[in-house]
Image 1 (cartoon, rainbow, N blue to C red):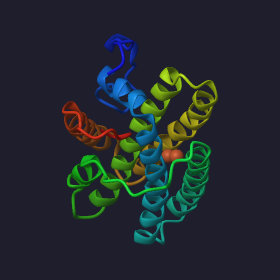
Image 2 (cartoon, rainbow, N blue to C red):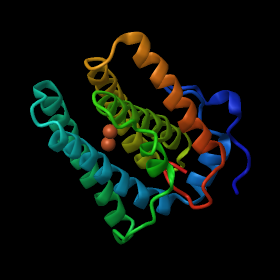
Image 3 (cartoon, rainbow, N blue to C red):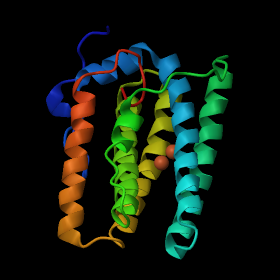
Image 4 (cartoon, rainbow, N blue to C red):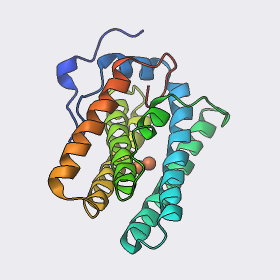
Length: 204
Ligand SMILES: [Fe+2]
Ligand SMILES: [Fe+2]
């Protein structure tokens, strides 16, 4: 464990998330950075996959297909950039167990339509918002200046992604219902992260 350099009060709550990350997470991430970088590669691949899966599920939703095509392309480009960092550091692109975070969030998705689509979009928005927050924390606390610059460059994209998912969700639900569902899912997401997963992951 590195010395406590991150105070609770220095981590801002990202809009749409209910709770900021705990200082313990950034300490764990910086102390296990090679594993976090590898997990980050898997996260970018999964983010591209999630966008593509949504398109397959809703192929006639023109605006959704168009915007998710752009997100999938961007996530694949992030995937490639992270993989280049792995290569630079001589780290093999190995398999890694996923943390329970994604499956637990997915378990909250309601089944009847259009609730299912709304929830899938909101869950993606929350995942993107948490990624944005955590990539930003890595950019702030990573001791390698070049890596920090790379992480800052990714932060803006993830912020844009959560905005796109949120706006897409607003096409399929009225605003009060959407905001109340976002709060419910956001509280659930914070409850998952309240107990830190023992393995170092971007979404521990
Ligand atoms: Fe990304
Ligand atoms: Fe993203």
